[in-house]
Image 1 (cartoon, one colour):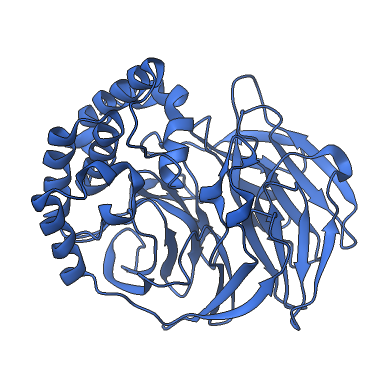
Image 2: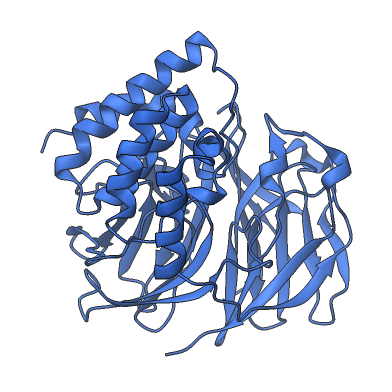
Length: 411
């Protein structure tokens, strides 16, 4: 397969990042320069359509782009094709489709989604963090102490939340001159914390390592030139860290012995890779991007696209987690966010069944990532990342305390 077009799309990743987080979408005409980039993206995604196992994600993105350009007829055409796949995409929650909200067919398509995907409200609030200006993105948990770690994009710090709900700074604002914080993971053996920095401008991305007291003990800048946004990460044993680089469209293995970033080969190029998960035995790596999930067998480097099956999409997973031969995904590029559990085939390459765990809920206003402890899934309900652009809060009057909610997972 020829994926040269996808490889050339690195310059458009920032646009898709905004789409992914629900920050793009306006009824006003777009600037000419932006329009040219969006039209280029439309062509690239259209060329990929015949090669993708899940057409819905691509159709929805193209419809979104045409709506962003103000072309209602083309937006509706692609949206119609997407919605009739019954995969769960819901344009009602995407501001880009505001120009279609009075259209009779658009209303009919939204009604179809409502009938096929009714609300699912099973979560409850576990903790509330009063600091409104955090704009958190990453969440991790120390399974022994049950302490949660939450990274801040806006304040560029990390806070802890105890099992009793007490909140304190682990890394203070301005400390160590770090950039916005995305992915976080706790090393089980020594309780140290690994973190990714994710600058919007693609400059200064780092892999960071903190000791149990929050002291920075190691920092490793992104390799090579070009733009880098280190997003999420997983730890494989004591010596390997795997992380997604959303602007460079790469997956890296960081080797702790050699202090080197090694690009992991995949069976297809990835487009804004984001969520990443590791199977319990540490042998299967799952990488989520705009169009699906790719599985990499780390023992022999074999690679497979995870097949979602009919009337289903595994695309757009911001947070991705392994749980008892299933994947828990926080999908926030479907128009309305949802949390889904994908039960996998024994070889982990096909989705056998999908369970929607939370959808259309007031506890899913702007979710990004979460963390699993036993059968409990903690996730950030209202990161307010949709009120954050170019590393600035857009409207401080809309900020509210951050809620961390909990779902009980099923086998």
